[in-house]
Length: 235
Length: 235
DNA sequence: AAATTTGTATGTTATATAACATAGTTTTAT
DNA sequence: ATAAAACTATGTTATATAACATACAAATTT
Image 1 (cartoon, chains in turn brown, purple, yellow, red):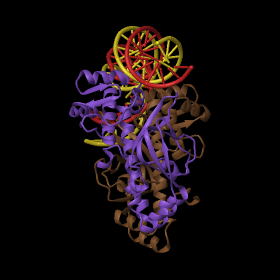
Image 2 (cartoon, each protein chain N blue to C red):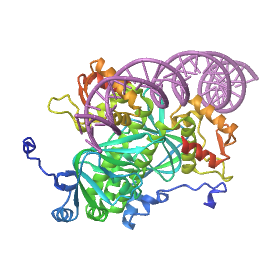
Image 3 (cartoon, rainbow over the protein chains, first blue to last red):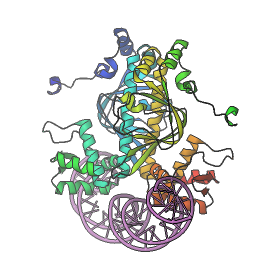
């Protein structure tokens, strides 16, 4: 942690994916270390696209990534925002389906690719690993269903407020404890909240007028967290 | 199958849940048979409610069940329609959370309850069982995300058409190959399609006028499946 | 059988939000 | 350095759908 503070960025390794690595035996750890690749992505890179076939498990070792689905009339919908150390693209892998969403890099990212065969072998010998995936899926499914209801039923203000709260939960704040530690375009914010870009901009402005937020470009400060949560809750 | 045709209804047993039972070894089968209970529910019974703690794996051996979440202003949203031999309530079980949705019987149902401890024991000894749950979750998560996009982006006609197609995929047709084999109130249809009851009724009527459907009370015949799919697709 | 409740049908009005338009601003490319 | 593109901002209009109202039909209860 402190090593990251000065200008010596620490290269992440697959050991930094505790929910994968920490579960394994010594022998399995070695097998995993010998059988994965590390890929670096820069901003705006596409990691995978809707319709492609997954080839292995992807672990986000560092960076920020958005996962989105193309909607009915080309309106993208962001279905998930990922942060290290999350798995990505694993739904399609385990469902033995094509990807139903695309993945794009928001901030420079490091990804570990574990070939399908390798992860399946590990799961065969290590029941705790399967259990970890089951738990992961069960949580994500719960979140997906919760979001379905709120995105369809809450009004614009409630949807945007909720999205900001969700982003805070995922990425947290910068050191000042009020600046959201993720910097999205208004369009991404809109696509994450099921609204048009115009309405995201407008609603953001009204939150600023109400002193709930302070906004400067893509920098969003949450000034009044209680009110933001209340707006989210009431819909 | 033919035994069901005459008036000798066959009592289902947990052996009728192939994705659970067929995977097990002889020893495990015996363990399961000795350690589960069978519960009968009648129409409108509540199987579990939002906020309750799951106590085991529920397998729908026979019947039809709706799973719904209470929305923002008491507007229920049906997030899933289950049919035998589906698992129900297993998301909360494996996520180690409270139920985030309630489950209500649509048609008289038989449910097998496998205590949490028992199913976890089976999973510890049988990796294929865990894999089956993983696959099940991965598919359901894909469906949930697909639905989120369509329920938020498609227009009313597209949403209702899609719901009818989904119901057809889940429950199929009666012998005439056009009557939907599930009989929902207009309100349920609306809650499954993210619209008001009035609009479900109205849209249903317009489909009848267009000769896409024939409706008589809760009996819905799909006359023109191609057109229904087209309406669903175009949104 | 009468009364009450619940579900279905349809018309009217209100409103949230998308769609469109224009312009200023910042970023990226040449 | 200049041009082009992408992003942000705000005002106006159009529209899909919710909300409301009324009526009838069917089911359930007394």
